[in-house]
Image (cartoon, rainbow, N blue to C red; front, top):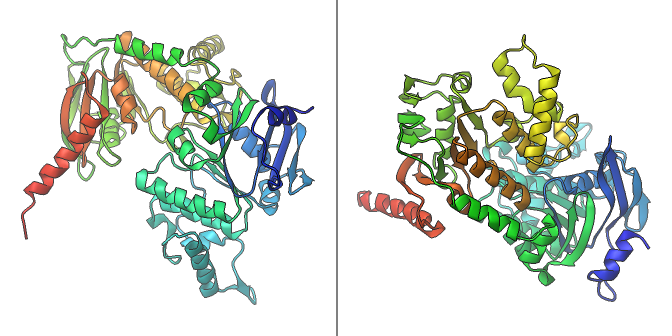
Length: 529
């Protein structure tokens, strides 16, 4: 009996007369060097169903998707599509079989129109020339069938990321995809945009498309998904109906340990207190930048975590970048250890023991073609200068130390960064800055798009660093996370600071009320017509 047979015999079975799976992946195994990324993992996808693929970062979700889409070759196992066995040697071969993927980072061309992106490489032609009107009509018909109200002649780059993702989905529909894989599609969307995406997904489900939904937002999984497959450490844990599984059960299956471990982290964080009796290690005096942030004051003490709370576009990231010198302030100055000097570049900040982890880890963090070890040591090597290479003994010691300290998986320092899951990439970036031994750490969305287990590990590390005396600025769109970690709360709105208070018995509702109250105050001040 295969592993899939065993799981289906013990898990939910399809009702009598249920449709044949569009895709069956049977006992898939993939090895990278000495690392077993997938170990006899099976997956079945039914038509007209949203199937959630669940697991921690490093569980094997991305590897399984890349095996299905022809990015990775399979060492063992079979892929069956519509009853026929396939061996996909490329993404094009997978797409030809009706399997399309929309990734978290939309891979389209912003300088082209919506219609040009949707039909790229498949434009209607006559005598070799593209028939623009026919292309626009076809794109408009596809968009309307999905309830997407977008002008197909508009330039894609003019639209927000949520609309671009919908265009990517529409492109997949136009190629008549029978399986649509959505990899973390909601990580950068607000509530209204998520609702629109789910509306499109429901339409596709009604049309018989099998949808694979990968997300770390459990509430969203329970709202949209019908069935789930759970992976852990490259192995299949179980296939379940979503309606028959509580969130508590799901988390236990995903992380392989009781939630008491996470509760202990909560108690550890809540027991820590910061000492504000001395001078601030960092002091922002009227720091601002035209069009980005109004003049802002901020004091940061050793051993303290300041949480920056606010909605998207509130100015959180803009403040973080000014504190690190990634952007140059037009007004004010940053005082570090009583040294009054305007930060003109990140190098100035690094020299003063300030570290910054950007929210955009793909564009401003990872170097995918370098190894884990090389990525981890980039900042230290840059601070030494490229003519003074780090001794091999020191390299090995540091890399092994931080792989163990942050539980980075796989543990192979020679693994390419691009092959790691998002959560493990984030841990490598954190290790990169910790190796420089900073005294001030600015973290912008360090847990975005990663699972609950990796998130808890990073939160615990932040609490540990603060307990050891490091000063931390922590930014997250998840208010629960900000409140969980911070000693002091700074609330921002419309690119300015609107409130600052100790984090004592402050709730998410309190923060939202501060933001909403400010909005009401601004409306009351507007002159009546």
